[in-house]
Length: 212
Image 1 (cartoon, rainbow, N blue to C red):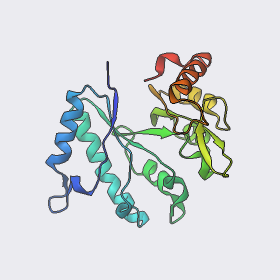
Image 2 (image 1 turned 45 degrees about the vertical axis):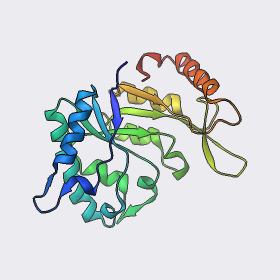
Image 3 (image 1 turned 120 degrees about the vertical axis):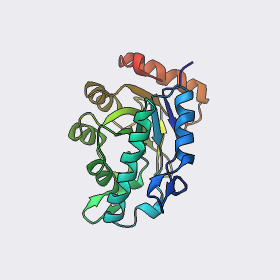
Image 4 (image 1 turned 90 degrees about the horizontal axis):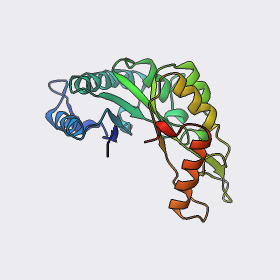
C-alpha cells in the first residue's frame, strides 16, 4: 500500500512570528510525511486570521512558499486543498483562491482541486483548470446534485451536474497525477455500493490508472 498524499493543516501554530520562520513542529510533520512515503503534503484549510485583507493574505503566501521549500528539501511537494470559501470570499476585487494562485510559486506550491466543494459557489472548475495550466497535480473528483432541501450534495459520478469527466480529462492533460474519488452523501445507498459505482464510472471514462 502506498500513501502518495496526506492532509496536514498549515496553521498559526507552525509559524514562529519572532524569527519569521516555520517552526520545528511543521518540520516534524514534514519528516513524518516523508517517512510515510508521501509525494504531496496538502494543507486543506486557511485560517480565518490570514484572510482578513488582501495584503495580509498575500504576505502569508510567502509562508506557503517557505513550506514548499521545506517539503522540496524532503523530496515532496507542498500544496493546498480548497473548500468553498475561497471562491465566495473576496478581498478587494479578487477571490481568496485567485490571491492564492497569484502569490504562490508554482514550482513550490501545487493545488489539489476539489471540484465538488466549489460547485455550489458558482465557480467554474473547468475554466479554473484551463486558465492555470500545470497548477493542479491532484483532484478530488466529485459529482454534485441538488437535494430535496435545495442544497447541493455529492453523488455517484456521472449522476449529478458537475462536469467531472471533462474537468478530469483537462487536468490530466495538463499534468495532474492523482485522482481521489470522494463522495460524502449517498442518497440512501450503502457507501460501498457507491464506491463500486464510482470506480466503474471512472473505468468507463478510462481514468482507472490514476485513481488513488
